[in-house]
Image (cartoon, rainbow, N blue to C red; front, side):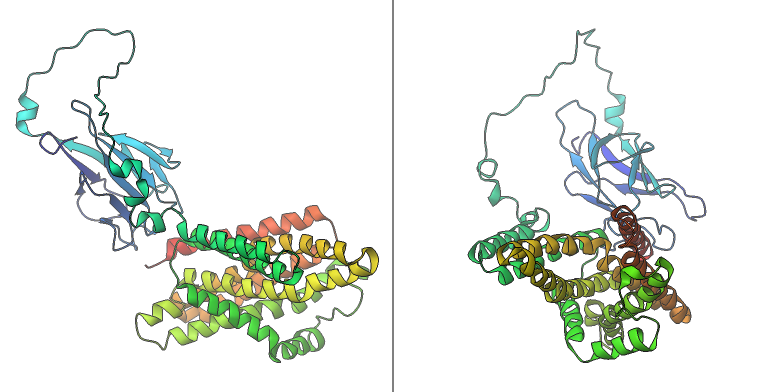
Length: 439
């Protein structure tokens, strides 16, 4: 489409319960048009009216057509929580749209229709004669044989997209870890630390992308380190005395000899309530500290919404998982295996345990702590019911944690089902947090 022939518009259709006249937005022929609740979008939708719309939900960009071709636009879903629908069909990635196509953001969300306004001189022109029947589609669009410098060397033309959209930073980090792991082959402890750190970072990056909100990396790292320091401090012994000696969380007896209900109760106190409270302490600390800082430090450090709680809660779980795996489980199994099969094979056994424990944290520690973090963030949005909300989240996360630990003695299949259930709870909380996000 060229600017002197027609002009494209995006007309918002009236929604049930939404007051006001229909709105029209110009479809610029050069820039992308982002639609969402983020104030930086070109089409900004009211968060109170359209909670199902993501902060950056959909982007529309004009497609350069050849002379005589109908104007068209490329509509892309930006990994939104509730999806983008074109003419009633859910969009998977991107799709070319033309005049008359309807775009809906989420099911029963705001709906737009693409329209094209043609100037009077274009409308009064005599219609062209039909070229007559053809045997099949023909391509008459001339193609230029010239090749530009940036086409031959695309790295000079990608600009910010290279770092923002091409996953360059994760790639650089991966290469760095690979080089370090090559350099530490034969040093089992250092190699395991590097591998565990990389796998934990990859698992966390997956959750971070799913949340879709920026949080400074140093704040996430600080939350993870704070949990490690808590576990290494005398405070851990205080928690052990309270939850495993005073409360019914005694695990000194042979757990395999206990019945499932008794084991579940003990795990609820010894693992669920104790460990989830330990991991929640840095999140609660950030919530308290952020409320006393001025903007923009309040947003960077504090917990202002459920997405903040999820990001900090899962970061805390990463620290807990790394210390528990590298400081307890892997050394213990290497020690036990050394007595049976020798040191070399024992180190391999330790490595085999490390990988599933770290990757499994997405459906384990990260799931429970992220779920509790959702409730901590929700309590900030609804302060009048803060303690009720936090209590429900705390007990729910502890119950999921205890169920995972207790079902380990039944069968791997049951354990897998509990892991899937925990991950479902986390992802459901993330989707709800994105819908509730005021930013």
